[in-house]
Length: 289
Length: 259
Ligand SMILES: Nc1ncnc2c1ncn2[C@@H]1O[C@H](COP(=O)(O)OP(=O)(O)OP(=O)(O)O)[C@@H](O)[C@H]1O
Ligand SMILES: [Mg+2]
Image (cartoon, rainbow over the protein chains, first blue to last red):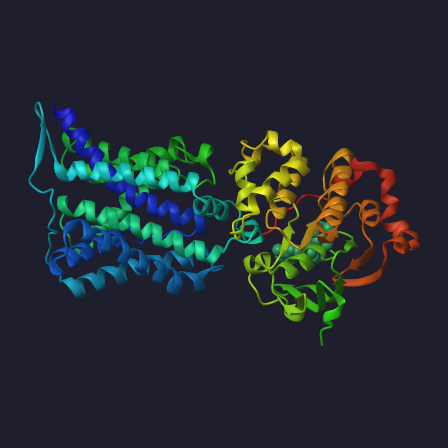
C-alpha cells in the first residue's frame, strides 16, 4: 500500500519536473538555446496566479487563463529583448544570459511580492479521494490530469496543425524553413510563448502542494536533469525523465537515509550519463520536437 | 539605376562576404521572365553564394537584387519566398523527420489560397514516386527521391522563379534526365523562370537559353547557351568532363554541409 501511495506522489512530482523539462526541450529543439531560467519562469507563473486569483480576486479558472496568457507574453518579451540579439553568439554567452535572467526573475519576485511565502487559493486543497487504504489529494490528481491533458494537446498540435508542423520543420532545418516561407523568427517567439505557458501551468499546478516563494524555481535544476535523462531532444522523453526522477525521489526518501532524496535526480543523471549518454529517447527522436 | 524592363530578376554589382572572406566580388546578372538561365563554375567559384544572396539567406555588402523592379536584397528569406522566389538548396535539405506529404504541405505554409490542394495533386503528378512514399519520413528517401521532394516542396510555394542549386548532384543518369525533363516542363507549362546551377554543364546548357560562367566570385563569361556550348574554354573545362561518366563526377564534388 505504502508503495502505491509513494508511486502516486512520485508521479505527481514527476509531472511537475516533466512540465518544466518540456519547456527546456521546446526551446532547445527550436533555437538550440538552453533556457536555464525555465524553473524561475514557473516561479513567476505561481506568483502571477497568486496575483490574479488572490489579489485581483479572479475566479480560479479565469485566473489560470490569465496566468498562462500573461506569462506567455513575458516569454515573448524575453525572447525579443534578451535572446534575439544573441542569435549567432557563442552558446556560453546565451547560457550566461539565461542564468542571469533567473537571478533577475528571483530578485524581481522578491521585490514585488516580498520574501515571505504565499499560498494560492484553489479548489483542490484539503480534498482527497480514498481508494481502499490509499488517499490521493485533489492537488496531486490535478497535477497528473493537467499534465496528461497538456501532453495530449501538445501532441495533437505538433502532429496535426500546420503551425505545429511548421515548428517541427523550423527545428529540423532552419534555413530550409526560411526557404519555404516559414517566418522562423516569429516561430521562435511562439516557442518561447509556449514554453512560458507550460511553465505557467506548472506553476499553477505546483502552487497548492508547495510554498510560493522566490526560490521555488530551483527545482528547475532537477527538471533539467530529467530533460537530459530523457534525451534533451524529445518531449515524451522529458515527461518520462521527469517521472523517473520524481518516482525515484520518493522511494529514495523512504529507503535511503535522510538527505538522499534531494540528490536522487543527480544520481540518476550520473548513472544515465554512464550507461546511455545520449539519453533515453535520443536515437528515436533525434531532432524531432 | 535599375532597368525595370529587363525582367524578372536583376542582380547588380553584388559583393557578399563570409565574415572577412569575400565570396562574391561584384556580380551582375539578369534573368528575364520565363527564361531558363544556367550558372556554371568550378567548385568554390561562388555559385551557391549568389543564390543565397538572391533568396535573402545572405545579405550583400554592396549591390542590389531586384525582383520585377522591386528591391529585395534587404528582406528576410521567408519574405523573399513569399514574393515568389523558391530556392531549392544545394544538398536538398528536406525536413528529415516529416513525412513526404508533410514536407510538401509545409512548403505551402505561407499560402492561404484554394490552389494548395490542386498544387499538391500536381506535384504528385509530376513525381508519381512521391505519391507512393507520401507517408514515409523524408529522411528515409534516396538521394534522387529527396531531390524530387525538394523540387516538389518548392513548387508548393507556387513560385514565379525557382533557384535550383545542383539538382543533379550525386544522382544516377536516369534521375538526371528526369530532373532535366521536369525543369523544362515546369518552365514550359507553368511559365516558371529558372536560375540553375549545375556541375553537369551539358545538361544545364541543353535546357537553358542563356548561361553565365563564374570564377573566383566573378562572372568571366556569359552568352547564349548555344554559343557557350561551342566556346573552346567551356568545352575543355566543363563539357570535357562528360567522358568521365557520372561516377567520376560524383566524386569530383564532395557533399558538404552549410552552416
Ligand atoms: N560558410 C562559409 N564560411 C566561409 N567561407 C565559405 C562558406 N561557404 C562558402 N565559403 C567560401 O565561399 C566561396 C564560394 O562558395 P560557394 O559555396 O558559393 O561556391 P560554389 O560555387 O557553390 O561551389 P560548389 O560547386 O562547391 O558548390 C568558396 O571559396 C568557399 O570556400
Ligand atoms: Mg555550391
